[in-house]
Structure formats: structure tokens, C-alpha cells
Image 1 (cartoon, rainbow, N blue to C red):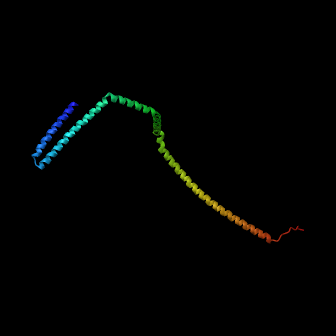
Image 2 (cartoon, rainbow, N blue to C red):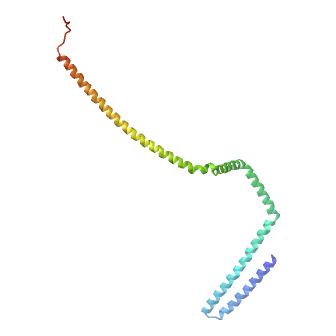
Image 3 (cartoon, rainbow, N blue to C red):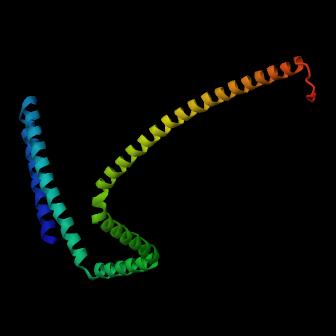
Length: 189
């Protein structure tokens, strides 16, 4: 670390020397030349800063590695594992329930992959045939119902006509009986 700090101090000193040199150089130049020089200097400063950022990133990675390797981190990691174990044990019932559901899903998946489910297309074909037969029977039943309804209407009309005819016959018979003289039974002598 001390070598890095001394290297950074060296860079800062070098940068200060360049700034002083630039100040003296700017004093001797015209305005257009000064703007170009300042732009070049800005690019160089940005390059140095980015290389310095890489060094900072490397230092952060080294610190992370040192922290992970340290015994404090290992003990915290073990504590974290024990805490995780306690949480798992506390949530054991829910985990068992989820495990049971997953095993049921697995069993259902095996059943769904079985040979019986390969017969489903054939079952659908048979079901379609049965539906066709059912529709035919329903159509025939409808025709039969219409024929029966027509027959019953005709029968009702016929019985109504017969009833009217019987009423007329009865009326005629009754009238004839009233018009006819009563025949007495006279024995033949």
C-alpha cells in the first residue's frame, strides 16, 4: 500500500510540474493555440484519471479479497449459515407442504404421460360417433313426436266428429221416438 501511495505522490508532483510548465507556455502563446493546448491537456488529464480509476478499482477488489479471506468474514459466514438453518427449521412445515405438493405434481405428471392418456384421441373419436348417433336418435324422436302429434290431432278431430255424429243420431232418434205413435202391445187375438 505504501508503494501505491508513493506512486500517487509521484504522479501528483509530476502533474504539478506540468501545470507550471503549461502556465509558462500559455503566457507565450496566442489565444487559438492556447485553446488547442488546453484541450490536449484535458484529454491527457482524463487519460490519467481513468488509469487512476483502474488502480482504484483494483484496490477495491484487493480489499474485497482480503475481507473474504479474513477470519471475521468466515465466522460471520458460519453465523449466517446457522441463521439460515434456523430459518429453514422454523419454516419446515411449509417446506414439507410444498414438497408434498411437488411430489403430487410429479405423480400426476407420470400418470398423464401414461399409456391411458395416449388413448384419448380414440376416446374422442368414439365420443364423436356417440354424439352423432345421439343426434340421429334425437332427430328421429323429433320426427316420431311430430307424427304422433299429427295422429293425436287427427284422432281428436275424428272422435270429435264421431261425438257430433252420435249427438246428431241421438237427436234424430229422440225426435223419431216422439213423432212415432206409441205402439201398444196388443196381443194378437
